[in-house]
Length: 414
Image (cartoon, rainbow, N blue to C red; front, side, top):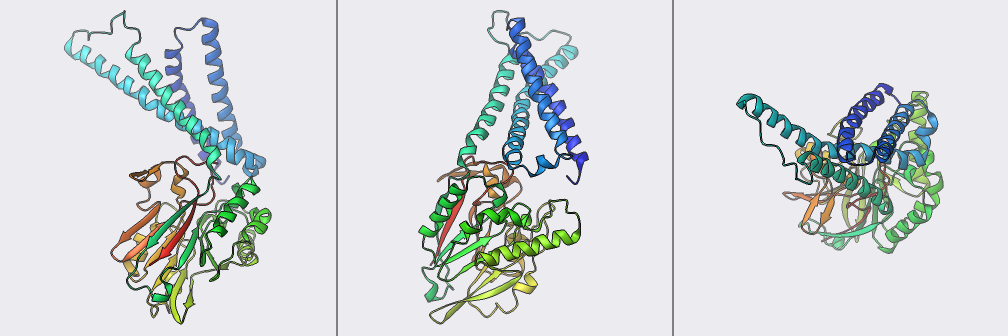
């Protein structure tokens, strides 16, 4: 890893968290027999110590960085344990604050605050400790359950009406996918089923909005014969996402990184996909035309790169009455597209994955990713402009989906 010191900092935070959570473990195990109590304590620290050892080994052992099993499952379990303890700590902190307030009240008032009766079956502290451990365990269990959803592809159908859409394009069916992340796949048959679902939609046009791989072009070697089956009457077009540039890898040289990107571009070509690199093409139907623009990754959040150049893709598209933009990062819409290009009718994006975790039903949609991205899943409208954010076909980091399932989008223009 580029910054091993970061992992030491993370390990230090986790160690402090381990000591804090252990106080709750001691509280709930106080009534156990000494032998059983010791077993509980030993198991807790063996798991905690193993977690820290693996984390500290990660920057120095190449196998851990390249192993799909480690990156997909072991790392996810470690992260799950961390967040489970973090959630539990909220309850423990609540109890500590409560006890602190009682202590201050005693000191200031000079009288002892009434304590819980000896006959009470469970103290507030033990109750909150159980609540915290239960909440953490529930989160961890939910993340384990989500492992089974990573190939559970969902077809979402959306109809979008535009007053300036040429008549010949009314009823056009666009198949939108994003964030394949082939480097995370371990079940080729499951991915083939997803591609088969795409072809069953019989769309007129297929558009892919970036992140074909996690880092390296060779991650597509085993999946070229899967995704090259994607065909549509009006073609398959694609763009690059932030992961496609290899920015998250320690390359031996700048030339090696550049070569990786060039080979990835060739992967798109081998599959028959037309990769749009800060340019536009014209789609023709019955003598009427619309413009399809595609730019490289351009992100307004965090440290995501701004390789995209709208000033190269847009010129020449002005004369067409309707325009579709493919841009990987949805933050591009508010930051530049709506501000400078109000005649871009529809932008298609991905990137967020809906964080692969959240709650979604006909009445309510929530994910922690919305704290960073205003537009993170589904349809958004401002004036005459529309944005659609695909929830992602693949996965990265966490090898699962909870609530926010992998998506195949069918957009019908009207």
